Length: 195
Image (cartoon, rainbow, N blue to C red; front, side, top):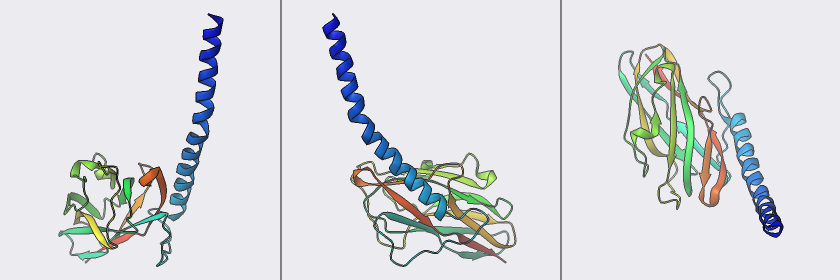
């Protein structure tokens, strides 16, 4: 009996030691990616980040396109990508001022396995959408630069420039590519100019 107990404890110790470094590495990668995101994602108030023309291979760039609308009109904002290579999953938040823009719908979805249900709309009245998507084949998806993957449609209710950004409020940003590689997330705000 003592022999079996010792063997089980020894097996568990080996299993624990084998798993710990890998989990630590994944957590460190996630923490590193999250730290990079915090520095790059533009908060609702703040400076526009500077985006280099040549992005590194370990970064994904998303941008809401800037558009114009008259007050009371519906306006749709394309969300475009750069460096979208072998992407397996994405999660993030989209923020805007609900006194300037009233969210209406999502349309023109062009990313495989992406549907309207991937967007959490439960706090849209607070100017927040959550987003979570993954490639169901797990092989990774690549898209040409400047591809629009979906459009967000709003009613323009304010005046001046209404800002739309990607953030970690309320969902933490996480982007992964094939082989469980965490990527940096880079973005810049888009603006709806309301006349």
